[in-house]
Image 1 (cartoon, rainbow, N blue to C red):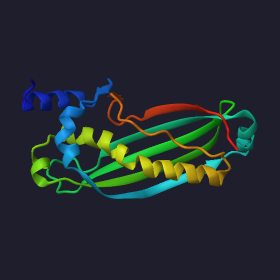
Image 2: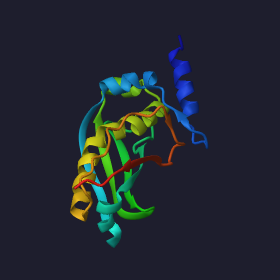
Image 3: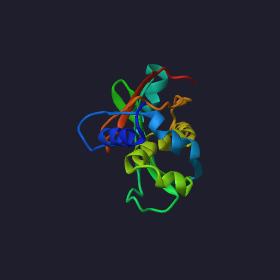
Amino acid sequence: MESSRAKKAKIGRLLSKSESAVEVDLQALKPLTTAASVRDVRFIGFSAGAAPEILNVVEHGFCQRILYKAELLNDDGDAPPPLVVYLDFKYEALCQKKVVCKISTEMLAFYSIPEEVLSHSSLAQRRLFARTNGLYSCWPYLREFVASSAARLGLPRIALPVWRIPKVLPPEGQFSTMELHASATK
């Protein structure tokens, strides 16, 4: 069984700003995830737009591309609670390989975590928590935002899939990508 120090060192290596993918060790995050509660979620910016070709999706169908990343905003080590996570999310609908709809938003998620839990967590653990749980907590808001924005732009009814914490993340600061193939529905 790995010691606490060995786990923290492992997370530190995984979260170093490198060019390699990051393995997600959910066990190492357990103290934070079990103690954390979402205090607030705020949209801090958003945009949506569509091309005239959006009318073609009913006839030709469309594919969806989702890009997302999350990062710890207050990572100076001495930051008082709450823990703040910044999320950057982009949605694109493609018809015949052309982007016909773009929806993007930036959000902040505020977490209450007891001071004793935070003081026993490493910066690497808090960063990994932000990249996984930050998105997990905000995903329902993102699903509703994309569905209502897409409907206003003329896309057929869409629903983003349930987001699951991946086993591997791209290097810190880079977007994760999810591509979905969907048929247009009336």
